[in-house]
Image (cartoon, rainbow, N blue to C red; front, side, top):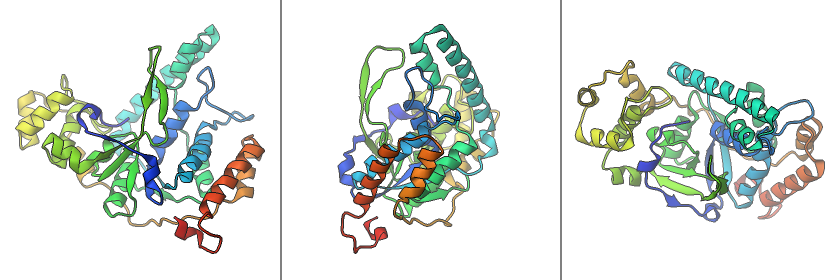
Length: 341
């Protein structure tokens, strides 16, 4: 998901321990997809309760979010609203890929090929409306802010970051930069060793930060040209220009001062209106109708929701909520919880 500009963007290592008492906005759909992809059984099947409901995302939201809070991070979760119509083609293509991956995953399981099953299982990701509602329910029970974006969550996060309502945005997607997020954190919830697909070795995944101002300075372009670059290599709203990769795209946007001239140079007439794509990123839909408030975890309701409804371990969930509550109250029981955050 997102625009493929990783090889062009400068980034720095990020020490999560320096984020004590910082509000970090999380691209919720992006984070949940990470959990669905990484928290799976040995054959690639997601974790499920006894009724067949997927629980991988709830596992990640509870335990990994608690780990971040123990470091002093104050997570704010922003969810996508109704998608732009221009995303329909991308969504259909992703659905097709998921369907194919699901078929290959099931076939690999039947054949006993666990490596193939695990590979295709992680690609057969499907986030359903009930799963999203479950995620919101758990986060609210944990006392964490849940904000609904009018459209793209990355756009809302970028707006909140620009207003200094949050310190940074946490997402794997570089789209946030096109939307203008001043400070982007990646690998916040997925750090550690990760197996390289199709290879028999692992790489170290570390948290990293990207400052938009520095990234644009290194590329010697402004944000509008970064959006043009994204349009050339493909976004969620448009197909890429043929035979153009990131290096060619950066050369083109630095050479020209209008997208019309870029079109002439590439000799490719796109079947979409680039102005509409540009406007999505430069003038995105956002809202001021949000509040960032934290509360104390409701242990009893969390136990009921996760253990009674989704078969989680009562002992493990209870211990986790105790740690979460202890962290929130560590600066003194006389202090209001909201002041800790």
